[in-house]
Length: 409
Image (cartoon, rainbow, N blue to C red):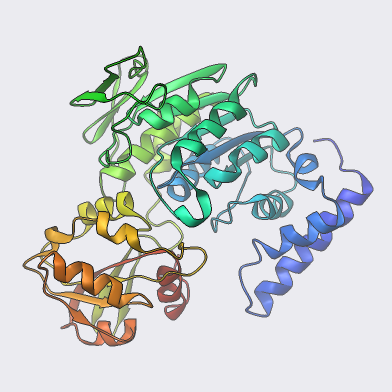
């Protein structure tokens, strides 16, 4: 790799030092502060760190942290990979990740949906993975059609190879201006944000996985990769059993996207898939933690689409603890709770906690789901009998619970 200019070397080194100090003093994992320090000293540091690397950017409303981890695991088969393992998905986090692995020939960066155009323009990444778009943090990220439009403009005229989920009409529209697109039929369980055509505003007709606009030519592209229950069919028609350890349909979809990205890096399925099977937990997601004979499995859900996928993974035979906050990273507005169908929880013990527990309690009451309100997560866990319990929490609530257990990975 080309050696960095002296100023960039100094900025990168001081950023790494700041990150190390942050970790040593217990202030954080250093994945943001290191990048901020580096960018203060050299505003063009991200561009310089990205130069001469083979980069993939991963963006979506849900699943980008997991998919980033899966792609990274696959590409480790080829060499060292720089990645923002803790999910710091804005430019400061990207700088920190690339600085920590300054000699890595490959990079896989999770990117916040809103920042994707800026990061793509800065890094010139050769591969972009786009998976889904649904409402999330509306007070910060704005309307998802606007995000899809920004993706279209960012990809237009660039040589980037896009790996896109053609089952999501908004993703398809956002990706369709790219010079090269590999379409993946990864599935779309949550459809409530894509009943209208993003091209003309007309109604979308849906039949099974297929969709098409009733009033214009916009329609689902023919996929090269297809998720087929617990297997993937590759572009050559060969069927591969996924057999990954991460649970649920959403993670099988993430795995298919990861395999398509790996092939864009010339890594064949037979070498990438065994690496994907080694991943058991991602930044605490799906981890089981234990306290006084109670085993709590941690599931993250940040928006209606995420809750739908979490319910798919949760065991209906077990009690469940739900925790919701509304801090900055979550979005202050909790009205999205009314878009989640909580009736699936009827018949099982439900415990509600978090800063916005009363908002959630009202939603459950309207859904006729019996529940108990708890002041803290510790109180909710202590109310469980010995044995297993599922926990679904949104972003900051999830991080607080992880902190109680030493940020299990």
